[in-house]
Image (tube, rainbow, N blue to C red; front, side):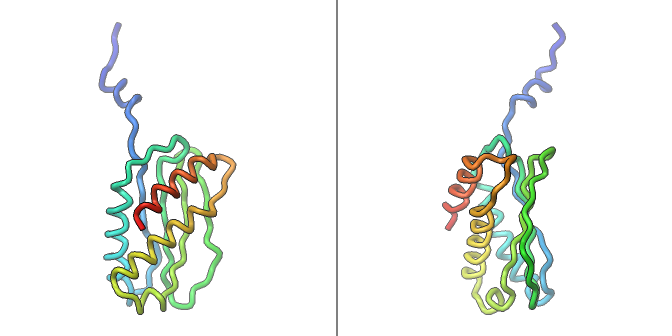
Length: 137
């Protein structure tokens, strides 16, 4: 029998969910956003989470003066990736200190997952992601 153990081990290996945070950021807030994003992302990456129907979550954050939109949420079924837009209020973020900015970002991310609904993802998976993310508060 000609079997490749490396190939077989890759098939059986479960990876933790990948999490990305990017966005459109007002120039005057970029450095504050970057610091908060990096700290939040480092906390999210510590979460050991395996959800069969979600392999990646990509948060796209808008932090722009006077910007209003209804954040979109979509599921890329082939990649098993959640793509979620999050709007942070520029003025609130600007007047906040570093810890408040981190908390604003964390809470906004958790809220964006809390009301997520998609026929391709089980509610159990969404609830698990939400509960694990909520632990970072």
